[in-house]
Image (cartoon, rainbow, N blue to C red; front, top):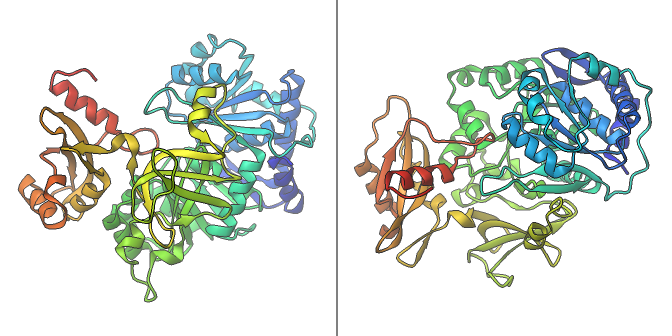
Length: 511
């Protein structure tokens, strides 16, 4: 069954309810469904065959969800792409996917037009808000096909920070399993709920819009993450949930306006995508209350591997939970299995560190047109995540780092996150990232890049003492670099690859 069929069921049941609100206004479910069905008819009339790929290179706008639903009603596969990517990168993704059409928005159209011309097989680029887009929405409507559950629905291209982006093949079954796990593990949802999309809709914010659309909830699409815009939305709408990367959550709790804001309408912030440090998490819980849910997942198992529910973020008295609980990313999601294994794929005992693997109905079918990548990631029915972690005796997962971020100094393994957690205990430290730099004697040495809070004085001596007081001597950084900002990708993840390049350039090496 197509996800489109289920969304259209909600639209028939709640035709007058608001479906999507953006800067252009509010669309009811009746209008949302009708426009998407007409656009689907227009897509089919262009001769795009069933299963054809359509790129959605769009800024955060209600048109994204309209176009997404239209693709599924037409029996096509959507390829959402982050609006912050360079048009040349988008052209590469479109070519890899064999896309036949590309949707875009006015702020991206001019730069994309020249690149789109060079993509073989791309029939057309359609910009929201133009006459061409309006013609699509005026076509004769069609009904969604009776799709098999494993029909391809969404090609999720990885960020490519470690190489060429790969397209994780997500089926309608994957997306439905993801949505059902949301209801089971995070929150029940109905038509009274509001979901704010303020992160890129091409990724987590768009994926987790689906549990709300399936239940007739209201989507509020903000152009981007702005603390004051989010706080304003909280005064306008009830039962509000939203996705926040850890950097977004720290910006929210450190913003002066949050101190006096009315947060009564906030239901849930589900956060993930990068480590959330315990010190920041405790501050967020003190300010926001028990409204935080941690999720751990990947595009290959969309947003769904483990979770730490809201109730486990606090103890019986409502205070932040024990540090070992907050430092974990919870336990396996409903329908998911999680193991930690050694290099031969053998289970490791509680507390021992290895690679995290998972299986369940959320796991992708493989990488698009990439048999080698698929064979490396999917083995024996399990997704090998590339993440390093350990399970405790209760089944709680503690993530250490990506396997590529592990530092080996003098033959000893050092996990950057462990060092970062200690450094963030200093009240003057806002952000920190720890990497390994080549060392002629030890193999690698630990280097910490530190961003201080505005007006704070932080020196290397104090940070060094903090490490000596809390972790083994060999784990402490040998060098501290104080920076104004840390480089991040489009999703707010700190780019350790860029930090390594900076060190290599300074040492006369090759990045």
